[in-house]
Length: 210
Image: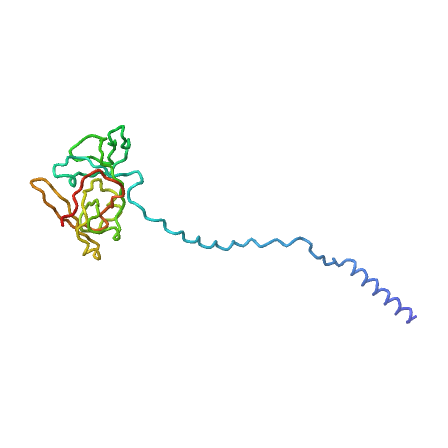
């Protein structure tokens, strides 16, 4: 009887163990794909610095210097104004062009003028300046900013005379006046206030005196 009792006890324990295994939830391995974490993207590298374009001219590409006004003191005393060309010079117009100044012409209320004196020019550089070179000038011996120069509407005509102070940024220029007798007048200008003539100009400009 004791032996049979032990056998029954063992069987009972086995049945209990088997039931426990069936009721325990099996561990499942997840098969869902792993999604990337939503982290902030790394900041983009700073855009490479672009090369600074050439400063170029403080006037627009269509701006010319047009000689308008009397010549009481000779060719050097013609006033040159910033202007746009309406009608280019041609044989049909007796080599005169119609220009529209960007501002007011001294002593006149007209908006357009015919003139044979239409010049192309650009800002001067130190290497341009040698005795005898024709330049347009405005201002004085003090440097002007590009913003200030862009507002200048009237320029005067000179020849470079002395470049001995070019290392200081200034040159001496001169012009011939025939008013009250022929004589030369010198002035000093900063290089930034000069423009170089880059086209033909039908003015008979006297050379520097020997």
